[in-house]
Length: 364
Ligand code: CP3
Image (cartoon, rainbow, N blue to C red; front, side, top):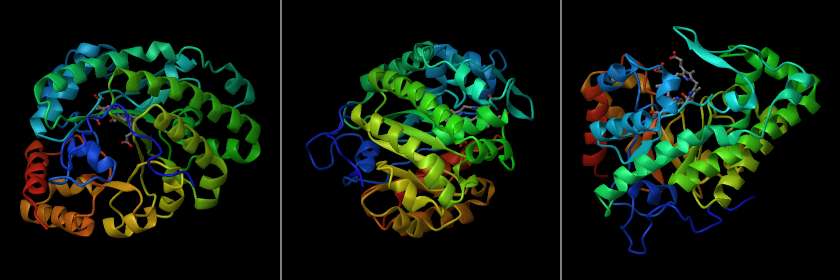
């Protein structure tokens, strides 16, 4: 098995002093921190008035492609919440476009990919030579990094770049959008493994370059979203998805940053996901954090795992749940507080801010 932290990581302001540097990056590396770092999956989004105001004038993809706007959305969300990390505002599906697949977001339906990938010819037609077109994401990261690095040198916010995992991106390309049963995806996996492998190889080639651009622009950490990997049983994960994820994770680590590997409904997959060598494993909320961490193994950090719908509960219940998670982590180095999946659009912002205060004040 690959060691969790093979390299001294380059981008993060990790200092020699025991508690210096960014507490978010320190936690990714399982170093001691003064308090548990906290950020939220989908912390910039429709639940926030400032984001809705910008969305009145721009589509989602326009915001992503204009570095000034993407940086503003990223920074506003992080500062409004007072979190320890800022995730760059982008979307999982952006790499599909330079590969030759057009998509849009249709109201109420989520993303729609117009010509899904179903045959070997479709896979062959995908391009891997235009990852450079995605440079607008790196440009936005540069602006975010310039903003935060000029602010507080002592304990700067971590900047998170991200991309989808090969399996999850492949499933979008094949299904043409979100899916309930992943029938087309699994059909290709089982009945045309040669096309499946070629598809994953092409995705990994593009994502490697995309992540490199993000790291060179100043991303301290890369999060890889395998959001739909929970649709696979363990045997299929091992046979059809693991190797491509592992390859991408290693490649990103070689660029000098830690990797967070996240999925949903992964209780049965956690041990195998950790075997990719990712530094941090994201946990969903269906399992207590300590059980999930045991499955991952204590040689990895974990991130999670509040149910995002708890943000609709009365504050006493919310606090109980936040404290349960922090107690389950038990002060062990390497816990990053987060949700088990993304914030949903009608979430009250003040409850998200309340969680930040609860995490900050908590003492074991
Ligand atoms: O603050 C952040 O977290 C950064 C922004 C971010 C977005 N998408 C912006 C966005 C991130 C990290 C993503 C990742 C993403 N995109 C994922 C993986 C994360 C996860 O939840 O597991 C997935 C599956 C996607 C694909 C995608 N994009 C979906 C399914 C949707 C929802 C469609 C809908 O209409 O709600 C999107 C749209 C999207 N991406 C929004 C945002 C803020 C919705 C708001 C909008 O339309 O402006």
